[in-house]
Length: 466
Image (cartoon, rainbow, N blue to C red; front, side, top):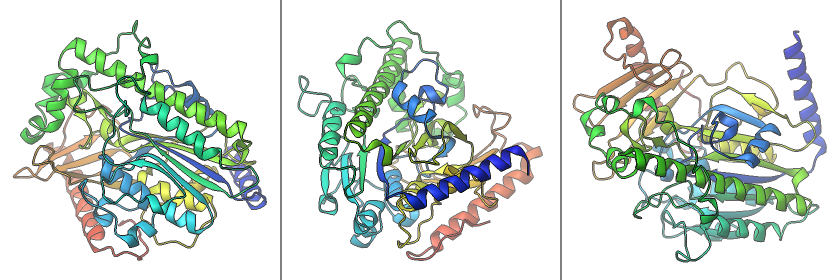
């Protein structure tokens, strides 16, 4: 056994022993909205200021290949709750709701039945009515997108309101009492889409980034947008690009305000973590930080998300387990998904009696292990069309390749990118004869995934089609 394998096995044994000796952990789940994977200092961004989240990453495990299986809040958040792919939970529109049976299978409901005190704060993601407030011990959720200043322009910023609500929940928790799971579901850095200024940070952050010039991404050039099918060039993503990024001045203003919102989230997270410490809860509270989807900052001439480029589907994930044996400063390159979050929280809580989920628990990775059968690809789907302004997209993302199908185009428009050689997704190889066999293979993988997901039934154990 080499030194690396020995250290990994030793850490895994220490972790397992420590968990067996510990009382059930609390879980603090922090979910942001529209935060792309590189909108954190710890993810390599040299400009953005996120010191508290960066420090959290140094104390835990930072995933560098975390993705969502559908890049829109309503479907992605339903996948986070349920551990299921979109076409299996069926939440494709904002008007869709979980059935009572589906709600009972979500991670908060399962944890509550297992004796956890559960709280939910912020953006629920499914518009309702009804909202599932009776399914929680503490509910401060809201339908829709919410507003950055919910009490009017002179009132507190939503980030401050949610921070105070988190403190209110934690004031009812004791270090030697009932374990809790608190889900804080941020609205930000999502834009206020109908406001003249799209991104509305807390005024206390207005001075941030004033003396910085944000580099414009290479793929923001119009030529890259013209490589896309016409339905994407004319989509809502392009319309929002015009509102947010179409001039140099507008680009700087929008991205700086997006960054300011991320810094505001960082401050909120810091205050919540400080409250955990003040209450004597920090040493037994696992903190999970993720986002519901990524966000185009003008790459490919687009804004928002929905489509399958990395900017849209790749998100941050940090897990800090403060208990003895929890890994510190670990960087994990294994492929993780939003559908993995629910089964991960349930296993961390020691809950095994629950409906089968399609995601996989990340606990082995958190123990320093890399299972031989860990996934090397996933299926992407986005079928929310918004009256034709957001064309549907499906595809397969492997460790090295990305195959995209714009299924509303006739004929279907395909993309194929070699991610090892083309990190920015500039060269579409779908029509390259030298890649015909690879295209055919990934096309068949898409068919296999589609068939398996269509055939899945609730309560049936899931295995990725291979």
